[in-house]
Image 1 (cartoon, helix red, strand yellow):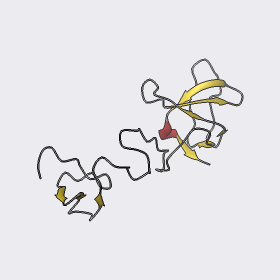
Image 2 (image 1 turned 90 degrees about the vertical axis):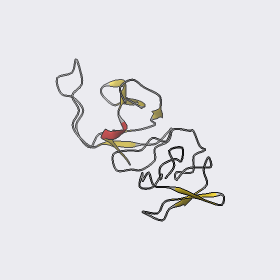
Image 3 (image 1 turned 180 degrees about the vertical axis):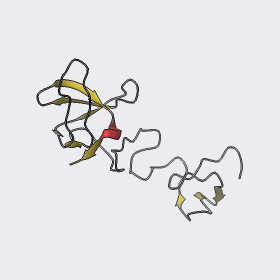
Image 4 (image 1 turned 135 degrees about the horizontal axis):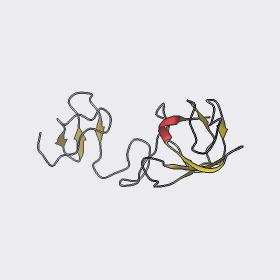
Length: 118
């Protein structure tokens, strides 16, 4: 209810309040420690990257492309269902946060919103 309280990490409600050492959301009932670990278990301040269905991604994961992608300079593009192994999470440009090597195309960056954890 105050402007300086963080929104709920579960439902993004702005009506959170403090109760002793916890933050509480009255809409979904979620309770958390402010400044502690977030829902994915990552330390506060560390960026969490999720795939198209909400799974948390990490370095070395294998992902599957969920929709056909056009590739500049290529006639065919990347088909939906293509597996990409050993991804690396990066702070890329324009939302491209996965650095990987796609079989048949070489090294490239993908957006996490177009892949699903395999």
